[in-house]
Image (cartoon, rainbow over all chains, first blue to last red; front, side, top):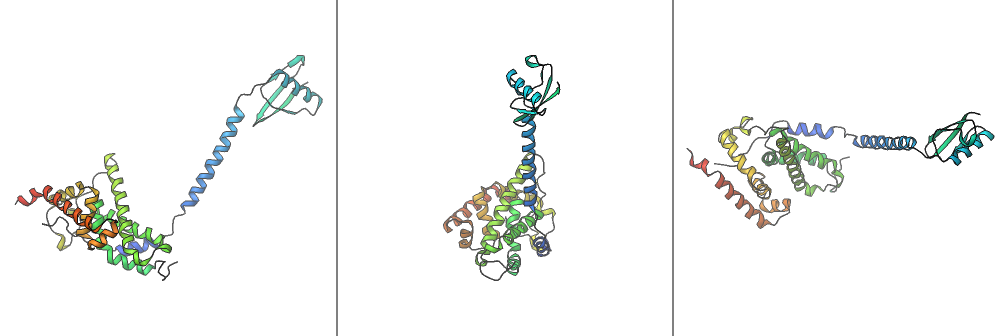
Length: 111
Length: 177
């Protein structure tokens, strides 16, 4: 009794191999590059959103300085902190502060 | 592009190797994956893999390269199949007996085949690869030793050890009428 009987391979093996060899190779690298780019973009935008929504502390002196510049200048200044500030240091005005990445734009809404 | 130089593999050489190795390679791989379709797939994958690296393939070492590539792929496939079966994603493959057989293959029943398969499967991989290669590849001990990167004496000893285990495990088949 043989433990290793010999089986006949299915017919048409060479034809199938030829077809397989002639197949156009998959462009896997294109998918990899696309996926990496998408991940990088997601990372960049994700970081921007996280940083933009992070609470920033505003010291009264900074806000007042910004407000003062705004009153004197063109109505828009850049300061290094952010938060809605109203009527600081006796000035009857409101300041909206927008956090955009590391910089903050302070815009007086009324004077 | 195919080339006729020694360091680049020609398509005709690969196809000639396929015709030369199809039957023994298929039979060896069949003892790894136990499915005709999978054995064919692994064999084709090995040829395809070698073909992709044809620029660096030396035709004089083509056969050993094909054997080692196919055996590695079969071992990977076997591990993946085991995992799938363990996780319940796949059922064990059907007995080979149920597939088409030629006249010289009609030896034993499906039940006997199952016992033999279990016994071969139970062998440690080092013994299994040697005994299957010795029985089915048609290669000399020397070539098998080179292909598996083991000493020629180890081929003989492992084959004997494997056959002993098979004899022990399948003794009951010989005793039954």
